[in-house]
Length: 191
Picture 1 (cartoon, rainbow, N blue to C red):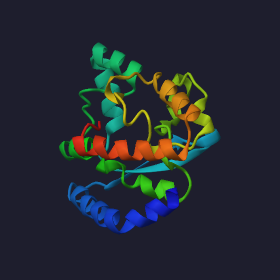
Picture 2: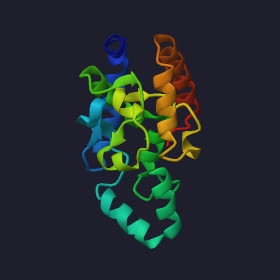
Picture 3: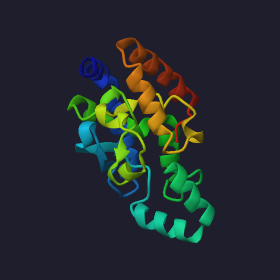
């Protein structure tokens, strides 16, 4: 199903990604961002996204967290920031609209990811993840966490969403999540 759906949307998605990549290229930086993520069984793969952050994002994050105790505590709990100094103005738009995720359709096509599954975890986050369901599943472009109150849940609570998804895994539940994702994208509640 994953491959068939990706092939069906390619004629619509590729022109959008190319247009967004040209806008990002005009900033003088690479329009694409590639990062190691953990896949099924703990295998590491390269995840693709449109660039939403400044090129020196890691250094900027370290400096910000050292200077702001409240931000450091927020980062430790959520592994994200409500006011992230690394994200560009255009990156904010891409994240809110979830357009930055479109290149991950390549990851789905090559089998690193599925359309529906747990949110892909960064390698350095593995020690913070308190569950095991993630490792039994292929990470997804969307999933129960992505359509939930994700902006209010801690990183550790992702394990609960993943366990729930694993317990209820079915073709019908995947379809429900895909349809719910359309609503999340249209409401622009991504972050």
